[in-house]
Length: 280
View 1 (spheres, rainbow, N blue to C red):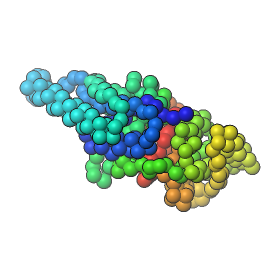
View 2 (tube, rainbow, N blue to C red):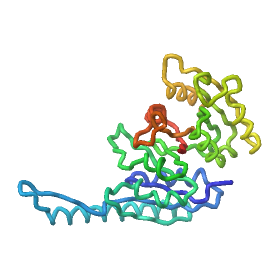
View 3 (cartoon, rainbow, N blue to C red):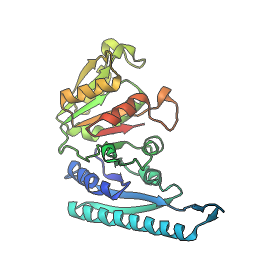
View 4 (cartoon, one colour):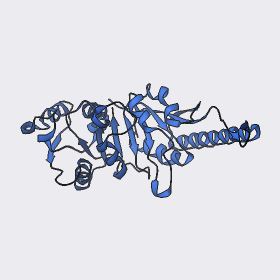
């Protein structure tokens, strides 16, 4: 079992080199086809005050700029894939909002894995892509690379954040190709006695047994968040175990389907320095 069709979502040209390199490294030796996607607006509406008349010249200039961006990202993608020896195809998409993630949804549903880089907020990079759309509408696992784009090669140590939920189960099983090749897998449960889907005395034993039947030896660690948050407790364990990757479920507040990350998911993503594989 492996990821053979991977979709990379490129919000800007700055994503191309680190994302493509990371994919090439962790799939080395695997028969992989990489699909690159970038979205630009299909229409622009610009009003010119004070008479609210569409400014044709401005609209034409915006279309030209979008064409240039699309071409630059596509050219960089082709060069990066050729350098890495990757089978690849480029899918430029125009959508009303120009959102690269929303534009990639159709392609995501026919991929084994979606990869996207988180923005570098210290460098004032904006998250131009609706990553929530990839998680809630794509139907596929999403690997979020840190802003640096760094991903350990090989991925030796994986931490699974487990709370017994549907989302955690989906993420864990979606990560099997990576778990199978890891040297160490740790299942971390925060405040097991407070989780409705966990039998505290036997916390983690069922999922550990399931993984063992796939040839994956996993250690179970239960921790308390104390006076901190669940996200902080997971982050501390990531540091303690020197994990290369975190696997966790993505869910919204009170499990409602809304376009917002839940508290733990968002809090962890904002502070994580390691890649995170999420499923919904």
